[in-house]
Length: 367
Image (cartoon, rainbow, N blue to C red; front, side, top):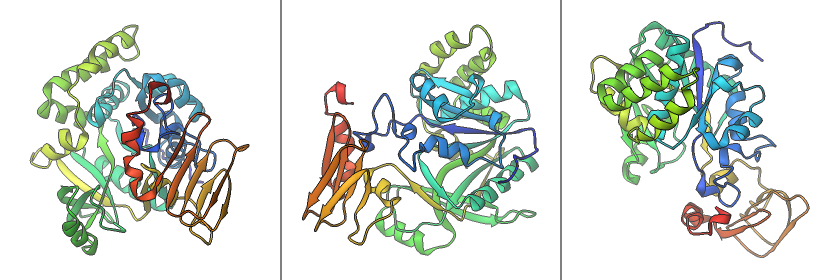
C-alpha cells in the first residue's frame, strides 16, 4: 500500500448526507445506505475512506453528514476524530457541505486543498483512482484558481447522469484538460452520441478545490451563504461552535454544487474549470438494481446476499440482513427481494427506481 502523500496541505471531504430511500427497507432514516455494512461486510463510507489511502493522511479526512449520524460515522471509520466530523443540523445540499468544509479548513490551514469524495460509489481499480486524484491535486497546487472535476468513460447511454466534455489539454500535465461544457441528464439520443464520443464522460460529482477559492467563489455567487459559512468557520473549535452551526446552517440557501458553484464558475474568468479523466469502473449504488450489479451472479443470473435457495428462478436480486432467515423462490424471474427484521420488499427489477415512492408512504416506524 502506498504511504500517505507528504504534502501537508492536502485534505479530503467525504460527503455522507444522502438519505438512500431507493434502498429501502435496508436503508432507513436512522441508518442510511452509506452506513450499512453490506459490501463485503463494510459500509460504503468506510470504503470511501479506505480509498483515500496513499492520497490523504487519515487525520486529514473530513466527513460531512447529519448530526444524527455522528456515532455511526465514527463507528464506521475507526479513529475519526471529532474535529474531522462536520455535523449538519439540516440537509442543505452539496454546495453548503463543501462550503462548510472549506470554512473549517481555511481556519485550520489557509493553504488547504481538498478532494471532495462521495460515499455511495464503488470505484475500481484503486491505482487508477489514485493516479487521477494525484493529477487533480497537482493542478490546484500549481494554480489555486482551478476547480477540478473528474469524468469516467460511460458504459451505456445513461439519461440520469451528468456528462462533461473535455476541451484543450493543459500543458505540463498528463491527461488534464480544460472543461468545455457540462450537460445534465440528456435525452437518450444525445446520451447515445456522448457514449460514442471519447471527449465525453460521466460527471462523477467528485472534485478537488482550494478551500480559499471555494469560499471566494461562494461569496461572488451566493453572498448570503458565504456570510453564514464565514460565521461557522470563525466559531469552529470554540465554545460557540454548536450554537452557531445550529442557528446558521439551516438558513443557508439549499443548492447543489453543480448549480451553485460549477455552473456560474464556467462563465467567470477568475476561475478555471478543469477535468481529469478517471479510467475506472464507477458504479453509483443508488438503487437495488445498481446494488445487484456489483454482486456476482450464478449461472441463472441470480445475485444474492444472505441465505437463499432458488428453483427454476432467473435474474433475481435477493438481499437479506438475517443469516438465520432462508429466502426460497420457485419459477420467478426479474424480481428484487429485500428482507429485514421488520419489513420485506418485493418488486420487479424494472421498477426498482420506484422504491423511493413506497418508502415515502410507509408508516413512520418503517421509514
